[in-house]
Image (tube, rainbow, N blue to C red; front, side, top):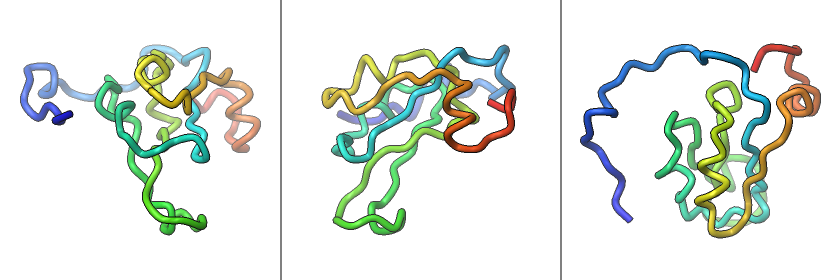
Length: 105
């Protein structure tokens, strides 16, 4: 699948989130195959490819990871992932698990 590089929506300005999402997408790196379907469909471009070795993990290849502060909780990535590697986790739980100050995301 080819990534869309030209479209009127791609010229939009990025603005702060309108409100805090109830849940945030979390990708399980053990289940992610790096197919990038989530990247293709994410409306906020908050998912990026991470090299396995650069992340300090064993193996070769890459997986996808969500930039938590940019996720709006739309669940589009969950719908598109053919490997069920993405789940929506309540924002409060994500902040607690990653030791992010409450209300930051």
